[in-house]
Length: 360
Image 1 (cartoon, one colour):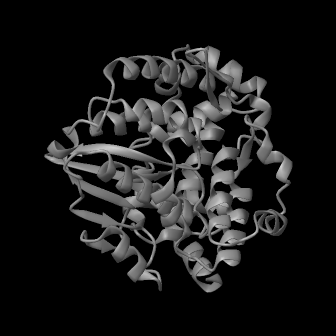
Image 2 (cartoon, helix red, strand yellow):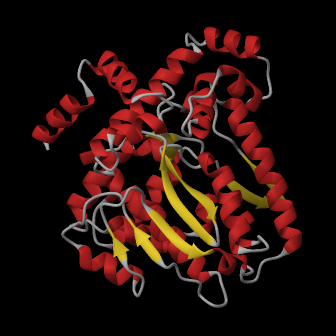
């Protein structure tokens, strides 16, 4: 997707289905280009990075192009190797230009408050990528901003997580008159060897690792602060246009993709039914079943696929117990979860964790 201005009017393109690779998680090519530019700023050769990642440079020239998450991981590996900077995600997040996110960014810049800006970003972020995102949640008097995973976890995605955490932290601080800061910052992965880089970046806020989630914790009321130099008239224009863009974007996706995303949104302690999913997609259950059949899929298969992928992710991260995982995935009992997981993988949850640990 890209954005341009001609004679005072705004126009945009959306990604079409052909740019999605077998319904696997993807992100906008413009984000890969930006990361290469940051690597070049550090003295690395972007062409050498692309060659190492086995990514055709021509793919990044298409404004509508989507890049698969496996290619994203390969690019991160090559960038870290070329720059020697394991903190490259933080650097990218701090320098992420608002125009790179196009209509989403312009909507945020003109939102009436920091909180509304975050809500808009959360609502439309899949336009830019669907491997992970940021979720803004209000808990009592606190604002809990966390990373949510929509794909399998891989070590290289730590840099994407760093980018999103750093970009959110920097944007909120830079766009509030009082430079609003969080109380805490937490990352779900183990404490890295370059811990001092994180401590310096988020200073004076304490930074923790090996948390159950990656999060930023703010005073909720402070996020009601107005966005600096926001224009209410422009907010109305951009908000309408990004809403239209997102509607077109989701309509372009295969129904298997749309159902998977909806299951992820509704899977919160109870497995959603096809009726709940079809209602969210504003169609009848029979219609949704027919559409999935045309794409060679079924609702039950997609539900099992999402639960399987999430269970593998949770077990690999070792941040939740088996009973907690069973609850999160909507299983009534741990024993039912264990039997189902063995059907999916051929291993019990304990055997899977032991085997995974032996490989690490």
